[in-house]
Image (cartoon, rainbow, N blue to C red):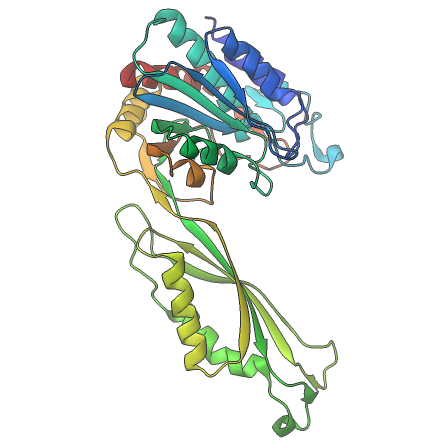
Length: 376
């Protein structure tokens, strides 16, 4: 299998304008390639979202590659140096929306499978691909729904590699072995509107909330652990007032977020926030949204194999990290014993002129192939 196969397939996928949750023709392209090497293809579409579960083999261990064909909008077309959905090679890089996040990874999944199966047609265990078109959007009808199907029939994954872009400075320098959870609060502090010259006839919610905010900001929620930094509390927006300078507002809206480690739970964090607000005698309503639980794969078989493959292909010592936002790994971990994220550089993701180094594309495919060789 020529190394240009990965680049060719990446370009084919980037040329599909698959702005979330519209897959365009990406999954059909992938399904045809996978069927040609013995995968059975199961389409699991929900609403406008397309998902495929492709599997080759029925025995354990099951190694699953997971990713998404949807991309974020391109942004202003005139700011791109080349059209976002016309994959372009320039100065040693491949440009196009989805080049880094994450169509190159998906292309490398497929080409790695093609080479591995050609060399090992009777390989041990099973290989699967879980591909969705709903990761960059609400993520309601994508991977989470596929995982529900897998759970309902008792289908589990031994090893999962999510192709999210993880490299910081050079390909292979970072493996994500977990992610923090995300818990958001939408708080309304209730007061009593009045004239600013007669404060005794009003209740200023900004003033009543200020001591509680100081305590929330100063609280140590947990100490983190060897994989996670301490849980952090951040306010993203505070809004109150009528626009007039002589009116005490009747309410204050505060939006905040926790990025939390496995040392805390969303239930525990909610209770501690309520305790602080109640201690300060605040009248309030609060709406909570937990968009992802923290997950962690401790150093073990999968991380060791990934580090060994990266060392062999790139000559780099990969570091484990749980930094960054959320990913579909938060859903897959429910059925996966071990899960990591490993992909190209994240330096240009979601940006104008998104790109990957051309030299990294065959290397990434080779890393995935070597991991299959060691795990199956």
